[in-house]
Structures are given as C-alpha cells and as structure tokens.
Amino acid sequence: MRTNLSHSAKLTSIKDIARVARVSHSTVSRALSNSPLVNQKTAEKIRRIARDSGYRASAVARSLVTRRSHTIGVVVTNIADPFVAGVVSGIEETAEGHGFSVFLANSNAEPEREVRVVRSFEERRVDGIIVTASRVGARYVPLLSNMRVPIVLLNNQHPSQFAHSVMIANIQASLDATRHLIELGHRRIAYLGDRGGHQSETERFTGYRQALEAAGLRLNRRLVTQGDGKPEAAKGAMAHLLALPQPPTAVFCYNDLSALGAIRQIRDSGLHVPGDISVVGFDDLYISQYMDPPLTTVRQPMRQMGCMAMQTLLDIFAEAESGHDIKVPGELIVRASTAPPKEKS
Image (cartoon, rainbow, N blue to C red; front, side):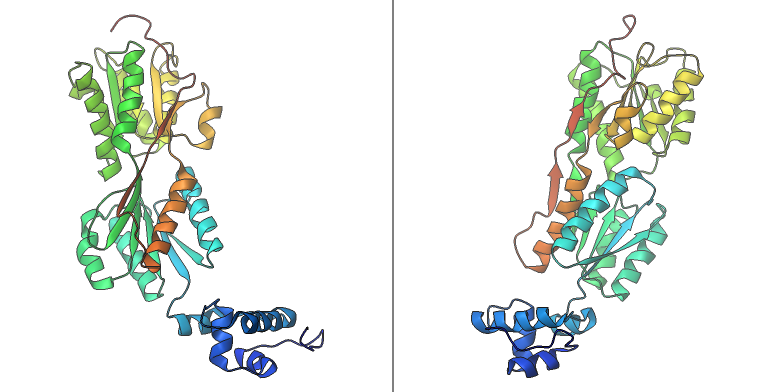
C-alpha cells in the first residue's frame, strides 16, 4: 500500500517524513542510512515516502549524525600530469560509489605547500586524505601524530604508524625494463632519472642497477643523469648523454614524459630511435602508443591504483583489515622504440 502523498508534496526534513510515517526522528534517520536496527518493513516504508516526496538528505545534517563529512581530500603534484588524471579517475569512481565527494588540490610538487594543503583538508574535516607522489616523505610521521587523519600515500612509500601507501613494484618493474634492453644486446645503457629525490625514483634506479649487476655489467656513473620528470629537462639530460665520448646505445627513463623529451633530443641531434638509440619509458600514458615510434614502457595501472587507494581509506573507516603498504605489479609493454644495437657496444 502506497502512502497517500500529493504529487506536488515535498518533504524537506526528517521531521516531515517522521510525521507522515508516524515514527520517531531517529527511526527515520536510521532507515535512510540503511541501519539494520530498523525493521525492514518500516525502513522500506520510510524510504518510499522519502523517494516519492523527492526528499534529499542534507550532507551537513547527515555529518552531524554520523560524525563523518563523507568527503576525501586528494593532493596531486600537477593536475596537468596525465598520470594524475588516471589515478584521480579511479579515486572518484570508488568514492562516488560509496557516497563520498572528492576535494582536489595541487601542491605543485612543493613540500611546504603540500603540508599546507594537507592541513587545510584537516580543517575542512575531511574523513581521509590521499596524496600522490608526496614530496614530504618521512615528515608525515610528526605531522600525522597530531592530525590523526588517515592518509594514503600513492606512488611514494614512506610508511609510518599513521600512513598507508599504494604504489607500483618499482624495483621489479625497472629490473624487467632494463633486462629487456640487455636481452636485445645493449651494454651501454643509460638511466635518465628524476632529481626530485622521491622514493619511486630511488626504487627505479635500484631496479636498473640490479639488472646490470645480474648481467655482469658494471654500473657506469657517467651514464646516470637526472631530469625532473618533464620533457624539457629530459632533453637537457639526454643532450649530456649524447655528448659523452661513448654515448649510450639505450636509455631507460624515469617516466614517459622524460622519454618524450629524450626522443626529441635524439632526433634534434640527427639520430634515430631505435636505430641509433633505444628508449624505454615508465607509466604507459595514453600518448605512449601514439608516439613516433610507439614507446616501449612499463604500464602502471593508474586507475586501479586510484581505486585501491580509495578502498584503503574505506577499509580504515570500516575498521576492516587493510594492507599497510600495497604493491601493484607493473607490466612491460614492448613497442617499436627498442631494438638491438647497430653494433656491439
């Protein structure tokens, strides 16, 4: 039996619904939040009244009852970074599916600004915070000891009592990428990193070094150079490598944007990829398959990592078991930017 409501009736508060349903305010509140404490038949009646009247719960009122704002703060280094776009889409998808809204803020890769943004999120009373590619690192330990807001660090691992992390298994992925070049016959393999000094860079260099050692190749420090994760700085770093008395026959880059700059510099120098130099990136951004030549790279499941970071927060809220430091495997995608060297190096 349907409740007798005019088509034009609009119940604007829990008090209105309680009056029509002939129940208490607390019963309505519990029914609308799917509490098991309300009899199923009564709960269905209350939800039907709310639905028929077009009632929409106030987020502010709901937060007063649940003591949650149902909001998540997300700190990114650069909103224009294609990696960030993939991660944020996964965060938003999972958040929306569980009734959470997302606040997005840009740190511009500046540690002090990142701290200010995190603190501003706390002042907004967000339920949790996700930080991508953090530049703050171990300083989160004293920061979070005062905040007590759950934080998930994505793509940068600095575990502490208060922080969880989700990141790709950088060492193994980088080892696989470098080993691919070794198996093609390359011996002078350069590493073009990111001087930002964050954990992911350290781990990718470690994988590169371990692959050389496993193949019995000596690490040549002259073949190790740094950019900043963007194409322009990578061009300069690649120019340095090409000016060496014995330039590399292959280069493994910290990310795809660095690989983009490296390829541009190689071409500007009158050389060819992969004919003269093979290039490997890291991320598998959407543009990588359309580069000329299509880029060999390590695929990071960006959207999946965003989903996992948000799910970690949901598990924390539910006081469920959640992995403290989650490692996601990468996948080497071989395309046309790598080939055997022209001659033995």
